Image (cartoon, rainbow, N blue to C red; front, side, top):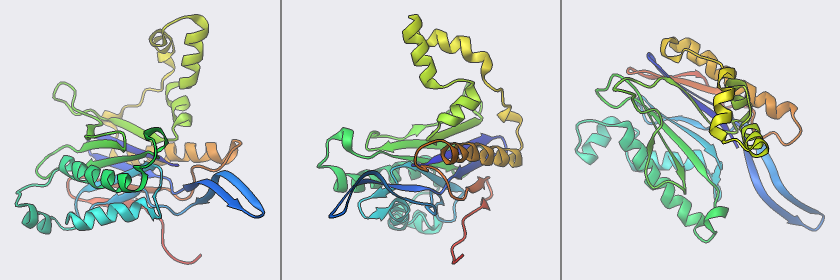
Length: 277
């Protein structure tokens, strides 16, 4: 499981993710019978830079496809598609510019094929879902783009924050285990809206209108990039704390990886270190 966030402000993007990866299933043995969360790892990578480009990938949902981690599969795609080098990519595909959307579409094809090879024998409702954000700057563009898809549900990529009236749509988008963020940001739980609607016989839209004043107003359009970094770190920590202290397995946790993306570079703000402790 995961919590990831992408924040779009006028100076660039901030991408952040926790590091927990839970292995789900059923364990059979002579002295053990266990179902649910079998193991939680705390050093999973869910945030990657694509080659040397100002493009990043966030992942949430299922952390494994068969015996391989999602990072391994994303890196395989990056290698096969020659996204690790802009020069190599242009030589292979004979194109003048790279684009974030094309990067997302290529990754969708690769992950869909890999996912089908492992889970096609299962009914669709039993196949584990994998969410992907591909975000960054297309060559020659001033503002960044954010594209998302979920395997195996989506056949095409979706623009997460399309322009509004030809103006950039600044703001934050979070994915994964988001209930703690929703309660904080909107001042109510989505489940509460459903319960109130059913008990009062009022449409959910009316309930949301009534509760709208409880939402915290955040001026993302004017937010400097460093403040967007602090905001992303704050939001991820809220979810980690929720799963640390509330009853239930630790579905989020570990160190927080954070990166910024501008027209000039992909820059790590905080990144897990590899080595013995």
